[in-house]
Image 1: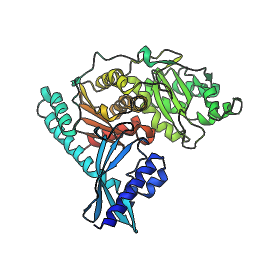
Image 2 (image 1 turned 90 degrees about the horizontal axis):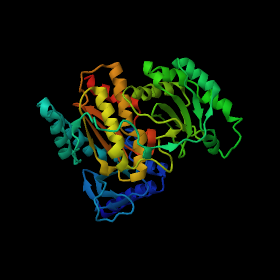
Image 3 (image 1 turned 45 degrees about the horizontal axis):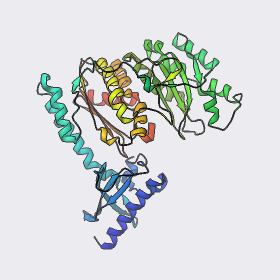
Image 4 (image 1 turned 30 degrees about the horizontal axis):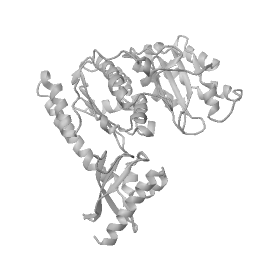
Length: 430
């Protein structure tokens, strides 16, 4: 490797992290290798306030490897990095590109090997299996052993506490959509819209033009999708339509027994335009009610807003145990949680993301999978949860469900219940 090659490769990697800081996704993609793009190995930028430190470039098998560490903004270089990797830079058409897929491969292989080791220890004896698994994963993966171990989480809260709730704004009943959902489900299920908030997305005040579109085209397909969950669909109290808190934000989630559809109508990608999408997503979400005892009073919500929501600490102490209790009940067995809480280092932002895309999605996924493929008690033994950095991932092996979430990307970096159910089935079917 010439000095010029090393400097050029390092400059390309610096340009990639600079593009990340400015949110320039196109610029980042231009600096990625063809193999990374073809493999779909790039899922979007990391948090823009990340600080990056680079080591000396070195030649390895025709490529240039640049050591890189990432730390959250505001911390000094002496603090432990949240991510450290040996970035592989390859030359393509006379320009240096970041081979992200090859860079991440050793870490993924190490994760799989550690999970296999954990699974072997789990199978030695049922009596000591769960504690052995916790120690194996913690040691192999560098994670913290969960003090609660493999329990049924009987002492966990049954629902959100008063500090987790906030008042809802005034809601308008969508008459046409309410009638359609009520007919499909077989009980009165009102569809309610935060009309003022939705109009605020466009800086408008007159609801007249929006009501017919919202009541018909936007809500088309909601009723059959909810009813597809079966008898549990009758547990749905209402459907609530809310405005996005960020550009393009959209998701469908449970809030107690209310089904919430948050959307950004300003963007073509900010809502589900196809009925097939609703039919794919909603049944798994609604099936989460089968194991849930959460009760959110009418007029209140537990879902995060732009200004409020659980911190990571609050989620760890109260929300996660609640969902683990529901998951344990759904699989009729003790389930351990091995969460790398330190990787969720942005207390407020990551806390709000976990409230929407965290363990709540596993509750519905387990119910959806059990519905299609009845399992023996205790088939799910542990859940491993971590911040995926820039690459989301989900796998299931030897009774361990592993999820790496990229929370700031929402649906693009996390998993709906239907996808997690597929992950559970992929390994269980082997």
